[in-house]
Image 1 (cartoon, rainbow, N blue to C red):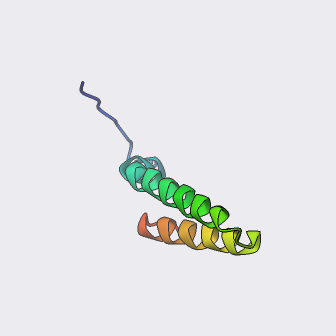
Image 2: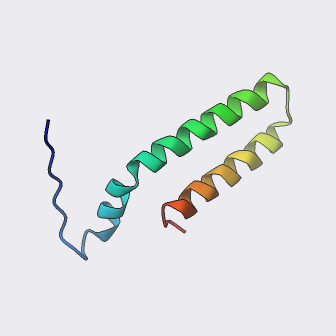
Length: 67
Protein backbone atom coordinates (compact mmCIF):
# COMPACT_ATOMS: atom_id res chain seq x y z
CA UNK A 1 0.00 0.00 0.00
CA UNK A 2 1.16 3.47 -0.78
CA UNK A 3 -0.24 6.63 0.76
CA UNK A 4 0.64 10.16 -0.18
CA UNK A 5 -0.26 13.05 2.07
CA UNK A 6 -0.16 16.56 0.67
CA UNK A 7 -0.02 19.72 2.72
CA UNK A 8 0.09 23.35 1.70
CA UNK A 9 2.93 24.91 3.64
CA UNK A 10 2.81 27.10 5.74
CA UNK A 11 -1.02 27.12 5.90
CA UNK A 12 -1.17 23.43 6.90
CA UNK A 13 1.88 23.49 9.16
CA UNK A 14 -0.07 22.20 12.18
CA UNK A 15 -1.63 19.36 10.16
CA UNK A 16 1.80 18.38 8.84
CA UNK A 17 3.32 18.37 12.32
CA UNK A 18 0.44 16.24 13.62
CA UNK A 19 0.85 13.75 10.77
CA UNK A 20 4.60 13.48 11.37
CA UNK A 21 4.17 12.97 15.13
CA UNK A 22 1.25 10.54 15.05
CA UNK A 23 3.36 7.57 16.15
CA UNK A 24 4.68 9.55 19.12
CA UNK A 25 1.09 10.36 20.11
CA UNK A 26 0.10 6.69 20.01
CA UNK A 27 3.17 5.79 22.05
CA UNK A 28 2.30 8.44 24.65
CA UNK A 29 -1.26 7.15 24.93
CA UNK A 30 0.01 3.62 25.50
CA UNK A 31 2.43 4.89 28.18
CA UNK A 32 -0.41 6.73 29.92
CA UNK A 33 -2.68 3.70 29.75
CA UNK A 34 -0.02 1.41 31.23
CA UNK A 35 0.87 3.87 33.99
CA UNK A 36 -2.75 4.38 35.00
CA UNK A 37 -3.43 0.64 34.99
CA UNK A 38 -0.34 0.01 37.12
CA UNK A 39 -1.29 2.65 39.68
CA UNK A 40 -4.88 1.50 40.03
CA UNK A 41 -3.69 -2.05 40.72
CA UNK A 42 -1.94 -0.70 43.81
CA UNK A 43 -4.83 1.45 45.13
CA UNK A 44 -2.99 4.73 44.64
CA UNK A 45 -4.69 8.04 45.39
CA UNK A 46 -6.57 9.21 42.25
CA UNK A 47 -4.98 12.66 42.59
CA UNK A 48 -1.56 11.04 42.16
CA UNK A 49 -2.77 9.23 39.05
CA UNK A 50 -4.08 12.49 37.58
CA UNK A 51 -0.75 14.18 38.30
CA UNK A 52 1.05 11.31 36.57
CA UNK A 53 -1.22 11.60 33.52
CA UNK A 54 -0.58 15.36 33.44
CA UNK A 55 3.19 14.84 33.58
CA UNK A 56 3.18 12.13 30.90
CA UNK A 57 0.97 14.27 28.66
CA UNK A 58 3.18 17.33 29.09
CA UNK A 59 6.29 15.30 28.31
CA UNK A 60 4.74 13.81 25.18
CA UNK A 61 3.52 17.18 23.94
CA UNK A 62 6.95 18.74 24.50
CA UNK A 63 8.62 15.92 22.55
CA UNK A 64 6.24 16.56 19.65
CA UNK A 65 6.88 20.30 19.65
CA UNK A 66 3.44 21.13 21.03
CA UNK A 67 3.76 23.52 23.90
